[in-house]
Length: 85
Image (cartoon, rainbow, N blue to C red; front, side, top):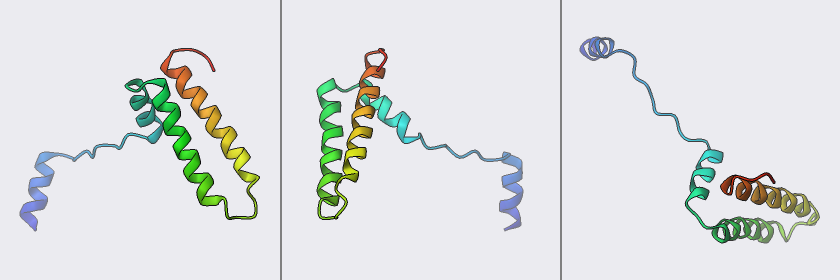
């Protein structure tokens, strides 16, 4: 145990790799995809949420989610094509 601690102090502090935030992963992935593939991905995510929450009484809450997803699609495509949403 003491040997391990001594070896660690000689190596210096260890740095851990930081994970890439989801927003940056989506942006990096969007650069390599066609626009239709991006829209299809967002659409499938929305359909998954809608099908999961459809049995609930408050289906109108999905309208806000749809607006958020549409805004996200526009922002992603604008970033991909270097334009403003």
